[in-house]
Length: 80
Image (cartoon, rainbow, N blue to C red; front, top):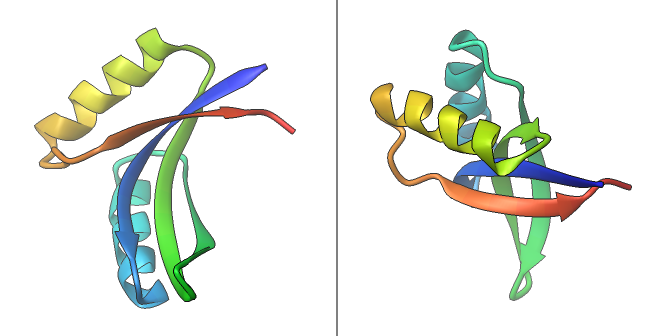
């Protein structure tokens, strides 16, 4: 099954990602930070979700945009 997420940011410092994560948790969102290697550097992505379908993803995106999160990158992933 596919899951949908919104990427709320990508940061070089884990503290920056944790700060955004905390702000989103205070808004009642399910949030996690995952690290990844990009061109030899570690980056920390803040992911909101998951949602089971694109309709719920779209609703969440509108809700977060109303709270000032405008540059949200939708992501689709296969559940392990």
